[in-house]
Length: 64
Image (cartoon, rainbow, N blue to C red; front, top):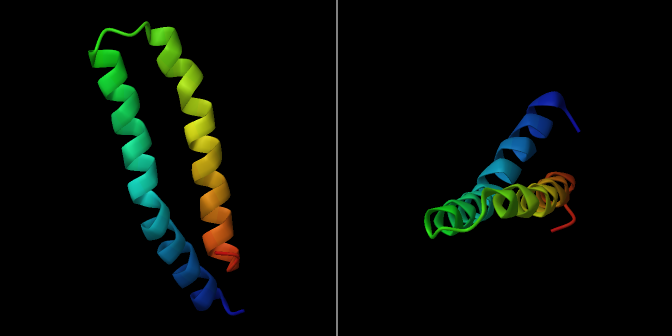
């Protein structure tokens, strides 16, 4: 795979995963605005970021 194709797949993977990351961040912000303890926001963020990273790797490598 050439460098230009690899960059294209990275960009396409980012575009495919961006809505899921935005939804996760919005849900955390809504929970914090709703009055939830900020510690819960810190506890919810790692799984959101982990699943986003796994999805990006899957889309980038062609698994999805």
